[in-house]
Amino acid sequence: MLYPDEPGNAGGLPRRQVGIAAAAVGAVLVLVLVVVAVTRSGGGDGGSGGPEVAAVTQTVTASPPVASAPGVAPSSSAPSPGPSPGVTGSPSATTPVRRWAGVLTVEGPSSRRDLDAVPPSTSTHAGTPDIRGDWLRTILKGESDARLAVLEPGARPDARACQDAAAATGTTDQTDPLDEGDVVCVITAGGHRVARLVTVLATQTSTTPKLSFDAVLWDV
Image (cartoon, rainbow, N blue to C red; front, side):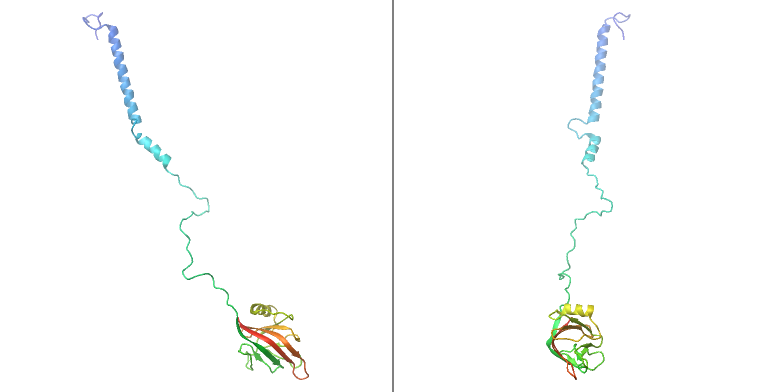
């Protein structure tokens, strides 16, 4: 560049003005570069922020997975299955059925009573009689593995209580001598019937003892 004070710079600009113009041009170039850089990095005021901004937004809004505690199965929103159609609950225990009630008489060892019969009958077949009398005393003897238990006078056990008493404390042999009021519970030889015998008469004679009972028989 030629300046006025240099040879060959006839009619040129003064050196000071040329320097000022060069500085202004440089400042304009720097400003342009800054604007371009800001525009490319920021994406403008109305833009979405570019890929970097979108990535930040996605990271903030995404819900992190929730880990279950050790040994705890994930909960399920599915409803638990209900009872099957027609099923209303577990079946109840079978209710004892009263089969017979009346006066039962036992006189001596020949009165071998089958309590599984309705009404109780005399039987001599092996395995069928449940009780019989004695020669000299007012006692009951068990037959065919029937179980007998004597309860205190005044007791009136139902079928289940009588069954439990005979099963827990009963004997397959014989009772002690009975008096009026004594109660005898019997589980028959078949095991499916229970008898409650309330002694209403106990007579000791020189020939044949006589026992009469107010009897109730249940199927259990």
